[in-house]
Image 1 (cartoon, rainbow, N blue to C red):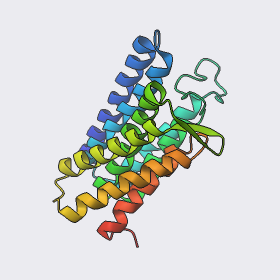
Image 2: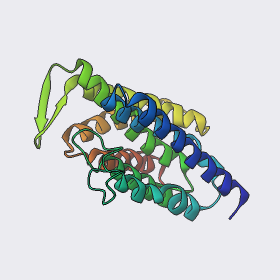
Image 3: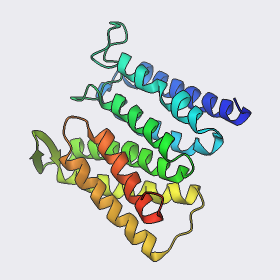
Image 4: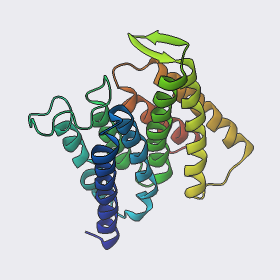
Length: 224
């Protein structure tokens, strides 16, 4: 294992451990739902650890992959009673499992274009996370698709936070901007909000990162 990969693993696991302690031991005592959303959002900061990794397989299968098993064991369907339901999102028992699957797949296929991985992760974490928080708090006008209730305010928040975090990700990864690129990012943000709005049962933790990453990859000629 290359030394940088080891550092990457330490950063990822250390950061997640701190987040779990903060959300489960401190925030969850008074605000259990908010604690899940904070975890959902802040885990996305892993997107800024990606440049440390030097090996595709280490990032995908040692840093990201194990969280599929870990989040399943902490879901409502866990065979381990003491861990069951610890990180489940309201109404979506597999939400964080899908989150880990998305990161693993993106890490493997877009390792050489880490900004694409980051865009998918941040759209999923900050975009979808704030869409839920703001929608719950301010979303009075609702709509239903496939039985899932969403709010127009939440969808607007999804678009705005996705746009903002994509811009931040590209600045972090030193991608040059053009007017065309900014307009394309606006389009990606709008599509991501639509995808989040119509995807049921927590599956937006798969659909949002994949669609967002693929759209950006298509524009850059990385996909197809």
